[in-house]
Image (cartoon, rainbow, N blue to C red):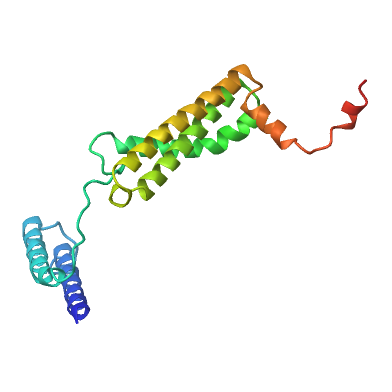
Length: 195
């Protein structure tokens, strides 16, 4: 019963808007002319106001979910520029398929460092999103999400530190990945012939 009135109102309003747009775009002769802004906007506002008044009785019957103000969300935070974070996440995601093969093909400390930094950033943001989604304060309390975010920061910092130490003091990340892939393969015959 509610949906029948809503759909009837919606179709009626759509027809009104269509006729409003046709009359404002065409003159009496049927040719296009300039917009009559004041008349068409006033008619449009009357149409919208009557729709809001008529539909508010119907919408008032639906239950309203209470808002939870204590959730930790990157999008709902009052500090920070989330557009820049989102752009950085997308740039890192686009750069990863380029930097990883380049680092594996041309082994260098610069490419190893770039690959390590991008992988750690990408992983950190992914795990942060998982923690934010699944460790909500309304479900697990306020201490657990803060502790998990703190542990994530420590894990990301330790991972990046370990990879930097591997790059500077060891063979490098790409070389370690290649040697890991070579586990279980038979050595080349030319290496066996050496004394």
